[in-house]
Length: 306
Image: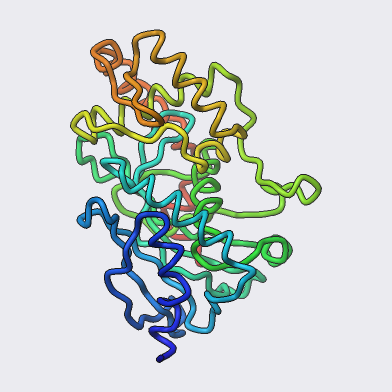
């Protein structure tokens, strides 16, 4: 078996157990030109729903140490693929964003910094095709890199996406119609070595309530044509410093209030929630104003060579 095909045997069982099928596997290259293996996986129940997994060619996907992490990654990915827009995540300030074009795996910084970097894009997805987006350069410090299992996509994608969301929450990224890459520093401040878990936002029950309601509004109603969305995504739980069970409890309360209709862990918006569109549009406008501080002028001028 060639090195290009080798990961397939190691990953196929975990993917199949999660309801995914490896539909293709091919050679690729990373940002620095090093060889990678790029696999396309589809949802067995809906083959049109796919995700791309890219690993360093030298990465040993068959290593028993990684079985649990791959199983978790595939299981969560399969649930997320059932969303109408699996690529869209919400920020605490109410911005629906798609994440894409992330060039896995991490590469060493070309600016001389002692960091590992991954590039990607985020786009505002409010149904109005505004073209607002940000090119991302997420930089992982070497100290932090030593605390994680691996810098490969299945082990890092979740916390990188959450670090991007957190950086937006802090007003340190701007969505523009054109511009250069903006930095997202990923440091040990996001990770407790003692608790062995990530920490992004300390949220109240009310904040989680408002977050889930907004998520169902945007992902189901505006972007999903009424299709149900997953309300217990562990990436959201991590981002909100919560748990999947707490999110389920919040969703149950939203149903009691007549805002969503629940079927298991999936929710759709009711007429009451859909009628709140002016509120959610206003939140997007407020969030866009918040993330446009004056100190971002240098970012727009391209002073972020990473």
